[in-house]
Image 1 (cartoon, rainbow, N blue to C red):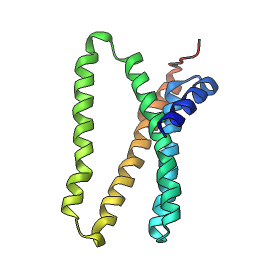
Image 2 (image 1 turned 120 degrees about the vertical axis):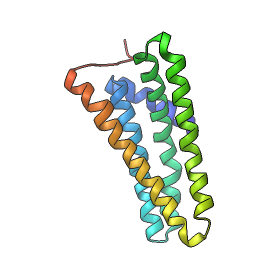
Image 3 (image 1 turned 30 degrees about the vertical axis):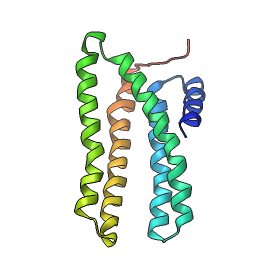
Image 4 (image 1 turned 135 degrees about the vertical axis):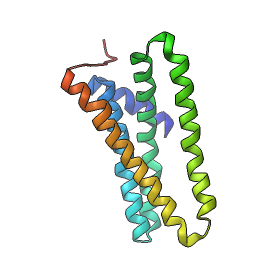
Length: 148
């Protein structure tokens, strides 16, 4: 998924010429395919789960690359260490939340709570990228392109 996500990122950048739009495409791709997985869970259909989860990782890679590029383009060089440290700390915090939820809801019948929480947090990320990153850029006509 990583190599394919990297190649698709490059294609999206050539086509869209905007890192913010590429980030939005990546996170929306992930959410769309996780929605397929959620449908599979509700219908107790493992094929939908597999078809949704595996390719959703491509969107995650696209978003991760775009996020790193935005970080490098928008954060002043003097501040990158501080911002990067906070970002790493927040990433570590949010990576432990599913583990903690898994301990709290360890019964198989309660797993749906962990799943829904994860799905909703991904949906929240889509909204944050849309309203906090992409739309403000469009309104102010700022562009962070990588194609010269």
